[in-house]
Image 1 (cartoon, rainbow, N blue to C red):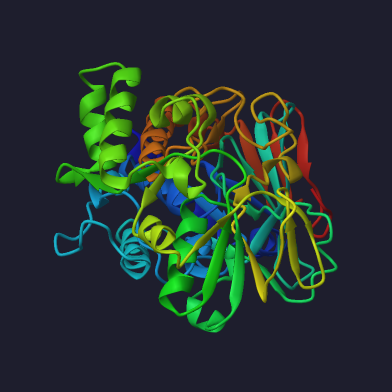
Image 2: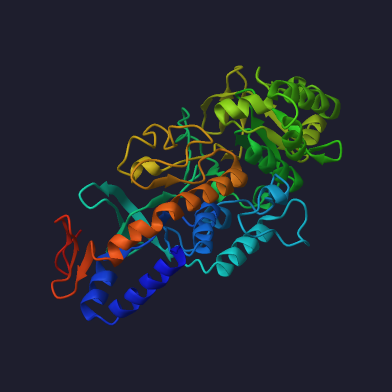
Length: 449
């Protein structure tokens, strides 16, 4: 039935396209969306759009950048690969090509995403940044306002469902470090780092010891730079593979048979056998095991791809927390100072949802994440959904995408009938979108909604 409603909408839309009043209004100010409005064309947004498309439900995908998966395309380093095996990273309804390696490269993953968007005919509205999104209780609809990049053109989208797919990594986090402005060398975030050859022969301080920080250090080392890494907090470092299997896959299998604490003890024992005592290298482990810590805080263990070997050989130096930056380098909390040519901030990303979503019950104002933890953080009230906020990577996003599409399918026909049956009508003669509850949504070709 969802498919039939989609066909009815396309027929109605086709007739309206020949209405000059409708064309002017839609192009300049307003667009009614019979299906969900999806904000974000990263893997999460694409996954939801594809799952909806399979059910015959149309959607509108809004993307502030000029391409899909902008974080991957524009803000990641060249040597990046998927840290987990491809079977745990594929999006719904489409597997990776069989000839792809176990850990696809950045370029291979992007090719997969482009193919995915093409296969499901997902065509985002690129270059539109969402200024605000709020629920109109009188209309029973979400009102999403956008501005076109580089232009003073504003648009408003109206729809019954809003899917927030901007994810956990929308904005780079730049910490406040005393003396930051005094440092005279190069200072960048990993979002603009591409390859280590730009730093050949230079002393580079990498701030942050997550997967990105560790891998950037390795890349710098491989390009004859002299990197040091700041390890301020405790962190779990695990081999990417153990006992001939991916550590992640092995963990998933073991957790179906044993409690988390038992699996954690096993992982730490094998890691100790393979990597040794990381505390002797200046990398202390947290008190909680890696899986327990991930479940409680969302903090991901580092999967080692060769960095620890470089630390052991002395090619990468481990430093404690930074006390302050100086003109020439950094002073650390142990009182030692050292000069550096460049500082790379591997300090991660954060959600930007609070800056544009006018809703405070489902999403936290503090961190822009759903207030309810996984697996219950995908659905809010009034047709609001979230995807890509599970802190469980692409696998978590795919799970939520399926849930969202299934949930919307259950009510799509009824909701769409309100438009098709005349409860919501477009009056071309007055250029007005009207709800039969009596609420006027838009009047005049140039009036803002």
